[in-house]
Image 1 (cartoon, rainbow, N blue to C red):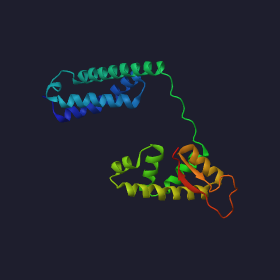
Image 2 (cartoon, helix red, strand yellow):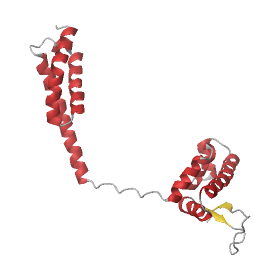
Image 3 (spheres, helix red, strand yellow):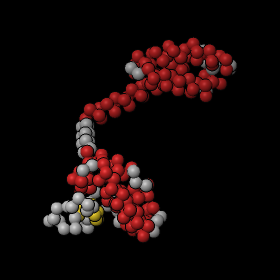
Image 4 (cartoon, helix red, strand yellow):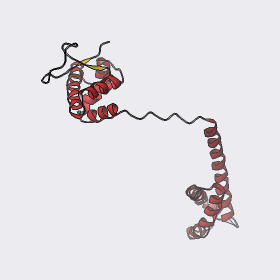
Length: 198
């Protein structure tokens, strides 16, 4: 049986050359080093047997090449699959209104933000949000009410009124209503935010 020192010598004397061989085969130095290290690890786990071979390095080399061949086959299968598959469609760029809405949501406390997203984006009912969060339905209603007011104020502060309205309409089923839709808004009057029940 060979000693631990002999295994260390084997590793130090042959790791680089085996890694270079496998790298030339796979074309990836990092992957080659990983596979050769795996081969040496397996040799160490069986060192009581492998250490008794006339040329332990031959065993390590064979294991490293077997691992490299398996990896090469898997890579080929993956490449063929990717070549046959269509590239995923690029996601459309976020509109300025969407970016403003996401930025405004970040400013709202977590519980109210979560309620708004669940209710308006995930289309969850108040009772479902209550069950999900462990809160009472009245608490969820409060979160939604306060969250809507905060969100409307933030969007008014960050963007012109028309942009704020557009952000709500495009991203969440909320609308900003005037008390009298036909009358122009006076300078001092603020829009009220109401759930879209339609």
